[in-house]
Length: 525
Picture (spheres, rainbow, N blue to C red):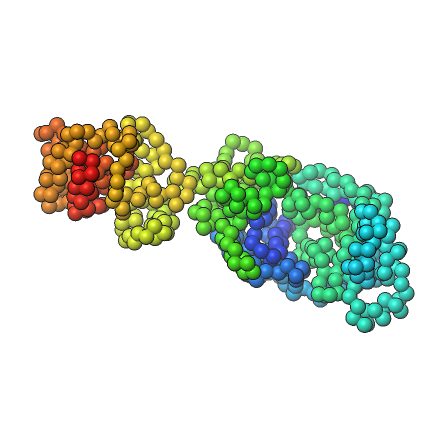
């Protein structure tokens, strides 16, 4: 029986090791986040390693994309690719000499063997033997260094014949993985095949060998990764034992899967495309196909909201707190409180988190996103205009009283939600919905006449500031008994929304106010 263990004396060191085969999936972001929280809580270090041993799947730009994603999210690494450190190189394709050394160690100690079977020969075996597996029961009938003489093996290698190195699994042993989330997981070695550890074709190891060697040499104490890697854990335990590293084996923790919002199975890009939410942190432009996939950043999500949302997918802090800063998460995080079961990806909740963070932002923080929204709708505004709209918008647009006296809240989850709520600041009404309740209630038979009186009054106001307008219009309303505010809102906005009317009028300017009032009088009559 083999179990995992690691010394409690060691400084905690964890790693996040993506492959540069495309954009970073949101599930990978959560894995990196949990590693970060665990490391920081224990005063440890987080390593960023690039696992690029599969040269056929390499995608240009993927590595830079992954680094940019974490920069945006605010997840900081202590060492690794682009961060430096004393355990490099951190890109596996640059560690060939290291891996060759450890492949030789396994071969010399009889823990691995060389196999020359071609893909065609392997396919033939699969056709002959149902559920064929390259293991103790079949390796004796295959073309490998166990069935061939040393002279034959050396000759084939000398001739440049492609080969692989396979790990020799001894059958009939219970391998116990002591998982920090799932407890003890026992798998019998008889169901494991002799995994390929190295391929001569590209002079690179497979994930299994590179992963073990790198974790050992980089002094990784805990391996926190997705549930999909759990079947590989017994093999990794056996590899640590084969190298004589059992005493320094890291502790494992296999995180629950992120599941589809609807239906069963693992969250995929197709789910996001169908339901209209991103599954990547940043927008991804596929260099091969030119296809563009949406990203959380470009959709208008705030990085703090994404982090907060992801942290609670599979982990419960043990209280009712939902809104947490990264620092608070570090204090509360506990791997033992991670669920064993998959977590449904609630994209509606993600938007809710973004709403919470968005409305908490100071006014000046809205400006870049708001400027982008305006430009996308063909509006060029000055910084002063944008700042003034944000000030008024946060006072009256997010929480407001409608024209019927009802207190309401706007569901602003993204900066793009601001356009329909602020469009009237920059675009005059071009039509009026006479069936709209607010307009019907506040534009009556005598309203056009009252608005005409007010228009004449406004025409004579020289100081068109809030105070300047109040000084003229307020006495007029008291003298005449006319209450023009909602009708004036109809004329300037076209609906029952917007800030204080004096502030709105001052923002629009006298000429624009008069133009909109004339149009309303002519149109509504």
